[in-house]
Length: 199
Image 1 (cartoon, rainbow, N blue to C red):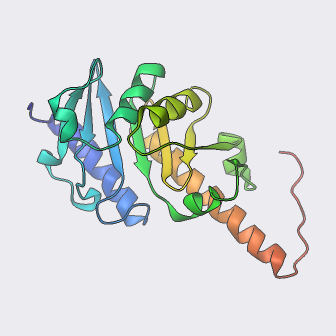
Image 2: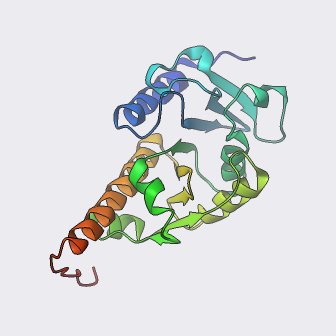
């Protein structure tokens, strides 16, 4: 197994810690990856994103599954499919609670906040068993058109050419989801909802 390049490890460690600090993952949930040529570096299955070690980053091939896939995240198949079908070079997957909660009630999340609407427009909600080819194809197909996708009862996949942009998309999805949820709570409390005009 190849040793992870320092710059790749440092970038993954930085953004994994950010996700953990935001409460977007449980103790050993979520995963992240970076594409480099025909390989990707991805976090190990059940690794702690808040304390990522160099040995927690696994190199796997984009061309076909290998024995190293067993060490990598269960969502390796999804990350691989995203890289095969889109021009993205970084993928983040987390389980932010507001986004997951809304996935039980919506087929898509349409942001009410200005920033979320302008950038994301809408965030589709898809279904599929974690770590399955079915889910991999569904997520990759969706990310050809959208910046992020919510998997029902599971979490968010965000992808971009740069890790900081993928992180921005992930945070925006959860921020917009929280605003949608809070808005529904306030409506039920009896407050009058003044729907925003089309942006």
